Length: 372
Image (cartoon, rainbow, N blue to C red):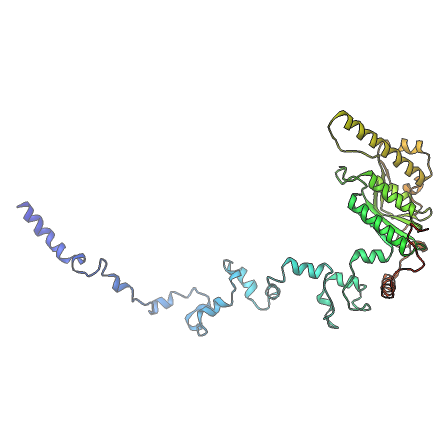
């Protein structure tokens, strides 16, 4: 009885169930797929969409609006995108010139490294090149031949300038000595200019990075060449660099007004090892100190005893102090009228040097320093 009653109550629900009469598990899904949102109410619900994206303005196609915005702008806020999408916005104008190639390191090196050719540059195209081009062309944009600028070391060497701008390490010593040998061979009657901006054998942390013997090699070469050596402290001359400054030709050792000079004894880094090794290092340090004092005495004209007493502690000297101590002879600046350090026409000197090389190069009367 109860079973028949339950059957009669549940039968209508079973009879009306779509699971029994439908051909698929969810037959009502057929009625969902073909729906279209073309009603007027749906159109009114899109009023918050910007005007350029509304139905009446889609004659060019909605995708055109997306094509106008590159993928690089996806994810930006509307205000940020507006900076790049507004035609008269300077950011938009600048971004149009930016490409993957233009921001590469190779492009930056070619534009700013002095390694490009100006052979295809028009008369009015100088402004698109970097400042370094104007510097090589005299800062005027005109007046020099439109050729690739020379590399800086060659330009300095043509002006007979050796630049010591690093701590005195083996690579620096090798370059300075080679430049001295070449310049003395090229023309021993003209002076060699040694510009110094070096911390000696120590770095900025007062750590030993070079050897005193490297500085002594440069000092020996300065006394070996037949050409006079004019020295200039153009920043700092510390330790062994100050010694090299003092060894220039007397009367032609110059310092700039804001340069500084420091004298200090040779040193070695903290080390450990066998007793015999420590003894050898101590004797080597003692010999280097004696030779350093001897060369300073030669350059300054003071006695070795006085020099040894003064350098027991680091001794700082400003420009005038260096002159009073005997390390330098004069202060030079833009108003200096010294003929030896006067401004020179580097364009003319470079042209003469190139002409000489085209004719066979070198001075036929000049002989290497070893054949005096």
